[in-house]
Image (cartoon, rainbow, N blue to C red; front, side, top):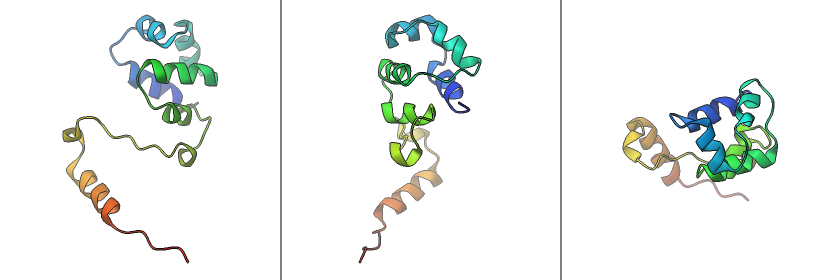
Length: 103
């Protein structure tokens, strides 16, 4: 679960564990277990994602239940001004470049 706790911690930010647990629909003791390295139950992952307005597939990917390919998610911040200009330009070129046709 190398990616789950950092993902949770970043999502929580300055919020209290109690408030996040309340809006997610589970007990705040889950955070202590996750912080100590206990893998999250998939149901908790889904509750955490939904309670925090996150993409459920991305959360399941961060909890290592599914791969990035299976999730096929792309994090796009709501405020595009926060994206590095080079990254934005590369993404635009990638999207505008036609993919080769499969025979």
